[in-house]
Image (cartoon, rainbow, N blue to C red; front, side):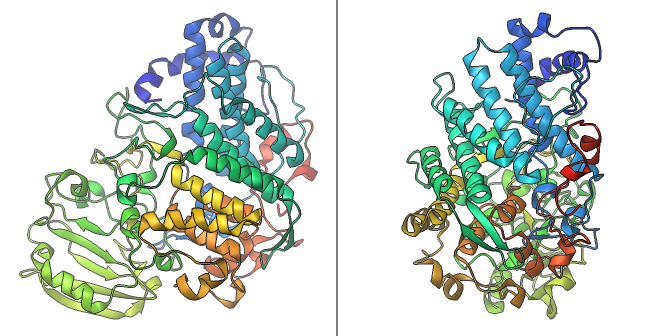
Length: 611
């Protein structure tokens, strides 16, 4: 729901919740004798509670490090300190771990509160079941077995034992199957006036597909070798279900929209979105420069203070790794659809119509001065230089702020500078590798999937009001492809995989075994071993869903977490870097120490291996 709806009642309901019970899951003491019954049993109170529950998504969805770091696709640049998640040095005391855990349980407890007080409201009950299941989906992917609670906590009970995944997954699936065709939910969140932000039957099916896929791996495969990513499949039951529900979520929708249009800042609420978290700058009641999220300011190289450079407030985190640079083949539209590869210069005054965001706000960009141009790895120097020559007038700095530069990205990155008078190429450096340039400002290219065309010119990084997509249609194609592969139906897997590639203009993959010789552009180190069928799916997901906060969960789920980190995370040299002194691999994030100490049914023996 848009925050214009939410904030009018949110603070009131938060106050009532804080009086009736603590929002921290495992410290649920009743803090006063004031009962919530008198408020939440009214229609206004119930709707306020519903809105507050929706708002809990904003504390766990638009995060980055816990979802992305410690994988193959990202690296920090300009000497920015690496995340503890990248280094695998997180501990049970790491604050980002504790906050994610408690925020997920806040969502669950709000959902259970809605179920308690909304027993006569079918839509609110169904929405709350989805919320609870989504919270547990995230918790199981990050922490494995966790306490599974289906009632609203409003007393001082502190006994919540960890529930095995063998019990949690079937319970989630049963709950979601019970509401996937619930007539109280809209069939689709997309309406004639855009994305309503409410949970729909289609969103339920998308979550079902994700939960069943995770259950297939966690309950239906056995790890045989952590370092090589070896596993055996013992059951295909949940994979078959995952494919079924992914196809149901797709609902026959073909991928006809261009990838660029799908992610354009000017095309929010398009019909490929299945469920999104809504933001609304115009009706935010506080300081709009700091009331949004910060996703547009992640995923790329440092571009300076945007109040000075007119570019974007990117923080040198989650930039393209040297492996990621090579993922996109020539002709794959997802390269330009994902990244801002032509960045316009800023005249020092006209924010939005010059500088980075001119890309969205100026129709004819043919005369706009260019600050930065990034070519993909496969662009030849001759072709790049021909383009630069044809547009040389746009590379004259003049009175603009940024000194223009251009790069061909790759293991030997080529850098161009320009004559300040004519804009012609003045120098070319083709001697330095990719890592060398990552120490410099403005390098490399930046992700544009979360750009907000109306972003205010501020030093705040929470100035993004772009809606955050949680589930979308092409994602379900990839879930179907992975599920069919694991169910032993390779032909169906390739069908769904190739539909994603076809929309991007990428050539079809004829079979899984030929992938390495035909489509892999990077050369993995020997530690990576031979290619597996699942690598094809993981590479395609990286291209289609770069920056969508799923990579760490994808690698953990598919048993490839160690293998990919040792091969492609420059901070990890061996499996020992991802293990404790006893040799236990850190397959999950640690259970927060505060949660173990505050739970009478958990001890240090319940901590995840590796910690």
